Structure formats: C-alpha cells, structure tokens
Length: 340
Ligand SMILES: Cc1ncc(C[n+]2csc(CCOP(=O)(O)OP(=O)(O)O)c2C)c(N)n1
Picture: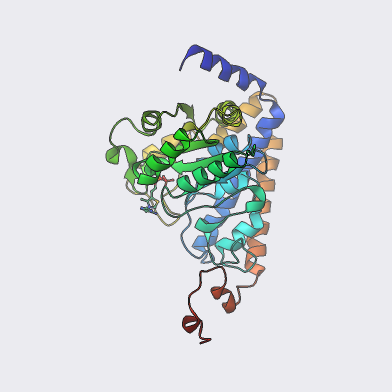
C-alpha cells in the first residue's frame, strides 16, 4: 500500500470514535443473532427454502453500510441477511419471509434470497451468482443520468468474479464513470470449492485493476478498517471519481448453506478462524478502550431478544392466501389462471 494511502487510512481510523464502534458492535450482534435464530428455526422446520449464513462476515456489512445514507442503494447476493440488516431493513419482516408468512418482505413468496426493501435502498438479494452486479451498475447509471447524488454499493463474493456479469458490469461502470462501489466479500470459497482452485490469475483485485478500477484490499474481519477504507472510497465515488473496488478478505464460519456441514474443510481450519471472529475482535477493541464487558454482553443479549421476538412474530403470522400466488408475477395467461 502506498505510504500516503496508509497515512490517510490511519488517520481515518484514529477518528473513528467509540460510539461509532459501539454502533458496529450493535449491528454485528444483531446480524449474528438473526442468523443464529434462523439457523435454529431451520432445524426446527420453520424455514422454507435455502438459507446462506454470513456468520463470520458481519464486519463487511456493518463497516460498509455505516458509510451510506438511507437513500443510497445496495445490491446483495444469496448471502444477504447482513447487508440487508446493516442497511436498515426490518428484522421481523425478514424472519417472516424466511418462514413463508404473509407479513414477510415478499408476502412469504420469496424466501431468504429475494428480500428487498426499496424504502431503505436495498434493491435486492439475488440467488443467481453475479446477477446483482448489472443491477447495481444499472442503478448507478440511472443516478448519473439523473444527476442524483445517491450512490450504489454492490456486494458479491469471490466466486462471482468468475462469471460474465462481473466483466460486463465493471467494464460498463468504468467507461461511464458510474457512482458505484464494488465490494468483493472474499471468504475463500465458492459454495463448497476453494475459489483459488477455480480462478485464473491472482484473483479479485487484479481482475478489477485489469478493467481500470483501483482495488483497495482490507482485512474484512476488522470492522474499523472496513469502515475507514469505505469512508474514503465512498468519498471518492460521491466526488465523481467513478467506480471503486473494495476487496475484503474474510471467512465464512458456517457451511455454504445452513444445511451444509462443510466437511470439505478441516475442523482445525475453522477453529483457527473463530479466533479471528470479527465480533470478538470488535468487543476486545471496545473493552480495551474502557467499555465494560457487561455493557457489551447487554447489547448482545438485546440482539438475541430482538431475534427471538422476530421468530415468535413470524410463527404467529398467517401464511399467505393462495390467491397471492398469482400476484407479483408476469402475465401467466388467462387459461393458466383458470378464468378463460
Ligand atoms: C449463475 C449461478 N451459478 C451457480 C450457482 C450455484 N451457486 C450458488 S452460491 C455459489 C457460490 C458463490 O460463491 P461466492 O460468490 O464466492 O459467494 P459465497 O457463497 O462464498 O458467499 C454457487 C456456485 C448459482 N446460484 N448461480
């Protein structure tokens, strides 16, 4: 990293105050609590469809989204609970969606990978790897044409860099200088495969730089570092510098889906990465700064209570009416609807 860059980041880090780091701790514990509750609910048979947990990756969602205004936009992927909560979405409606209930974000018809909330700028999770990239770039192009100050953040995994939309989307963003921050959440895996074994060349940062987009590497488990790096990149994007790329290295502490025991990696490797748990790191930092452990435990407890209440509300909510199956879809034809 060039010296000036390192200095600017160091400066930004020093300026992050305790209240802001506590805010990260709160956001990350809420994400963790939501996902642990969803994991248990899946085991109990309440969740319909697949759930991909971001346990271990919470610092990326929190550190990035803390730098966005409510009306800025994000797009997400299949592992989107953290991004969605960090952007300000409603935990109760998210849990109800996982349970396929009428009070869920998609009235129970979408599940985990289709949650969107335009009121908080969340343009959608996406089950198709890489498919959020052109959506983000399209939104950024719309902002540029409208001379709108809002920007777009596009979250995707390291597996997505091997898909065509990555090349097309980043190229388009570069040539039109669009206001978009690409955030590659590099957890080392693409489903059950180590990404490096299926990736030619040095990886995500080099791919972005080959398209003329400067890549900024960051320790994705250090929420303060993610926050500081993002602050700088968001400034550049908002200032008209065009697309930026944040390469956040992290690790997923659970299987690819909540039902995947992840036996393709040694237990010792996972154990090792638990020592690098971003929430624990953040707690240690705060404790070192004088925040009482009891205060941190109380925040984590509050997050678990909130998630438990979301589970209870989800279980109490009605299932969608069967007639809703014909809404929010393209015309399926009168014959199919039985009204010919
Ligand atoms: C176009 C497409 N190909 C394959 C899949 C199956 N699939 C789902 S998630 C995934 C891995 C994605 O890896 P990455 O983008 O790194 O995200 P991560 O799961 O690591 O968060 C694959 C191959 C898919 N959903 N879409």
